[in-house]
Length: 96
Image (cartoon, rainbow, N blue to C red; front, side, top):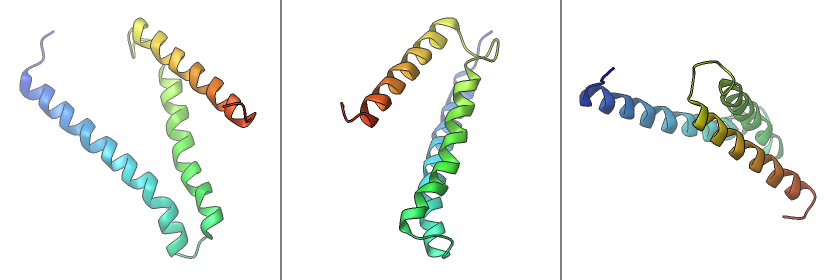
């Protein structure tokens, strides 16, 4: 199956705007919570957490959908995930 260069350009453009939109919303949520007097500065991080945790979990679960990605990429993503978990554990133990 061949994909035209125009289609590839549109796909790249969609992903570019998707990532910028995601980062924009993720950064805007705590600011909005403070300015709308929903919470204070200390509590605004919780609203950012509510945005990013489901995003991360859905991407991790996507690795286990059959046929969604190739096996080599799946192994690479699992490796990155486990390295990130180890780094996070070390950081909580004040060892990193």
